[in-house]
Structures are given as structure tokens and as C-alpha cells.
Image (cartoon, rainbow, N blue to C red; front, side, top):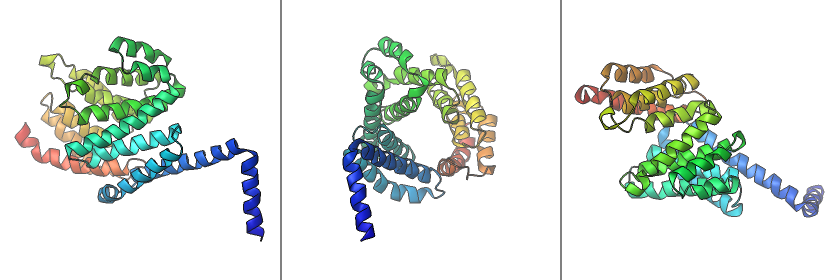
Length: 286
């Protein structure tokens, strides 16, 4: 009797303040999505994540269906789809579908939070760059997530010149994030810019030393806890400039390091596996 009365009282309170209850439910689901993302990031068995994450992706899809303008849920969905795609999906057609979903969720969040930037993202580069002045620290979580999803989408659509043409806008997006707060996501902006600025060799106009500066800053800001920084620096920078000594030193450092840093356990486990492969190829590559 007491529990039934409690439930009736709770329902009555919700009816008296629907918006308040909706806010409570929205907050709870957003927190759950964040907790799922964190649990995945702290998992030390990549195979478990590869096999189990799709169920959580479907669950977040369902939560978004019930609350389609919840920016936190949209960002959680974008991050989960994007991370899963980059880490585990090798089939090109599937990777494109999942990257499309990641970008679509991030874009919906962007359009809710920064409608002018959202609209300008489809315009010419100069118009898009002009719109970025309106992005403030308050918007950084949404805008950074959009830049990350966009970069991931371009990567899996690298054979499409229309997608590759977006690289200038993606780079401008990360540069704006850098202007606002270079320490955000433990220097993640520097890591993405390091990769982006390693795409072209010096003979084709590339500036790899700028890439190295970004990688080094990412290493510093992440305090060495994100081992993927070393792997990406070895793969994209050291190989680009044919520096085997740096290449091998970076990867040996990954092999010797612990993986279980909070928030980085999964990516570090993947980094260690990638470091083994790159080192095994080192003599043949150089």
C-alpha cells in the first residue's frame, strides 16, 4: 500500500510539473549514455567492446528516438558510433554507414546549439570560417564533437573527392577549437591537427614540422597517458619524414607503458596492438 501510494504521489508530482519531470528523465538518460561511453573507454578487452558495443549503439538510438533534441544524447551517440567505426570496422561500406550516423548525430547537435555555424558548414570555406567567430567556450563540447565526427567521416570517404574537399573546413574547425582551449580533451585538438597536417609531404606543399609540433603538444597535454598519440605520430609523421629512429622510439615507448589509465584503457590497448604491427614493419618500410 505504501509503495503504491508513493508511485501515485510521484505521478501526481510529474503531472503538476511535466517539464521538471522531463528534465529529470532527460538528465538521467544523458548520464547513462555518458556512463556507457566511459565504461567502454575503460574496458581492457577490445574484443568485448567489438562484440558488445553494437547493443549499446542501438540502445542510444532508442533513447534519441524518445528525446530527439537532447544534445547530450546526440553527442553520446555520435561519439560511440565514431569510436566504434574507427577502432573495429574494416568493411568500407559498413564504415561509411556508421560514419554517416556519427556525423548526422553530431550535426543535429550542432544545429540545435549553433544554427548559424550549422548552416554555414554547407557554404564556401570563407563563409564557414567567418561563422566560427560565434563559437565560444560554452559551445566547445558540441563543436569539438562535430569536428571529430566530420574528420572521421572524411577518413572513411577518402575515395570521394567531395568528402576530401571538406578537409579545409575540418582543419578550420579544429583550429578554432585550439583558439578557444588547446587543453580540451587532453590536447585532442593538437592530435587531430597533427594528423591533418601530416597528409602531404614537403614536396607537395606539406609542413610536417608543424605536424610534429602538434603531436608533441598532444603528448605533453595528455601527460603520456594517451598512447595512441605516439602511434599516430609514428605512423603519420615519422614515416612521412623517414625518421626510423623516432618511429621506433615512439613505438617502443608504447610497448613499455601501462595501458590502464582512466578513460584511456581501451584506446591504449588498441595502441599497443598497433605499435606491435608498425614495429614489425619498420625494417621493411625504412
